[in-house]
Length: 324
Image (tube, rainbow, N blue to C red; front, side, top):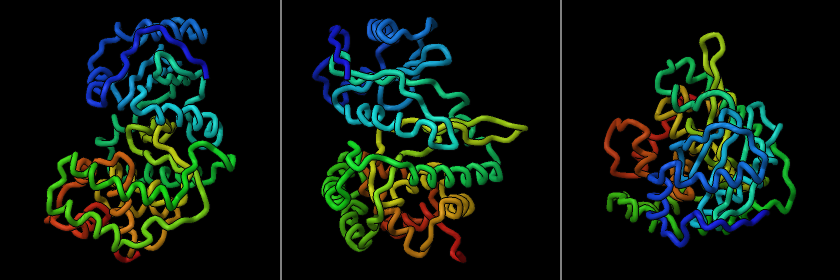
């Protein structure tokens, strides 16, 4: 990995200050870094734009190139992008970003990739009718199967020790929920609910898990008046782990949004079974998932009754067809 110091990016910021800098710094503040990378990697001429999306600093160069700058605070996201982009290239039915260059500049990780065609699914998802949404959920299930089948080296850097990984996530989740102002009544039930869920993320064979498949990480194109998925991006949360529950969780929350029709379409396409226990398993995974803001997740699904217990939450978040 190339390492360069040019003295343009801030150092030693805590997480809130880092977030504030990324969101508020104008394009001009980033241009010395972008111009340096443009020259170093022979990137095409064109106008740069700052893309206000995600936790990292994201820039587009014309219609061909994306540069992502990842601060030291969460550099693991940049490291994962560098590992995963070549791993997925040409392996899926969707386009994925091609890695052009990577390295460090002023202790920030930079990742240069090709720019995917199409529009973010998030830009059109709210306007789609239920039939188009169902078709896209079926396609999403197929993509999840493709991800599960991706081959990788035994010693790949993103592989986790599954039992230790789950223990660490469980041990750290309560403090995160407290920081994010989860109501005390629900907070007190978190650990008992997780314990009662038992083997909610049962260990199968290791498989690739993107972990963050949702409308802001999916690209779409329109053909004959109908939308379909065409691209997948953002690999900063990816792992090689042992349970499909963590892969199903995000699209079920952010795309199905409490629709039994869409939940069942995804599950059937993916090949999932055991609906009777899946609500509890998915809710337990939601409670321990890395960086999960559970209250934000709950707001994606309209409330249809009280949410005073996690069983009530589970029934509303994941209302599978009870006849399956």
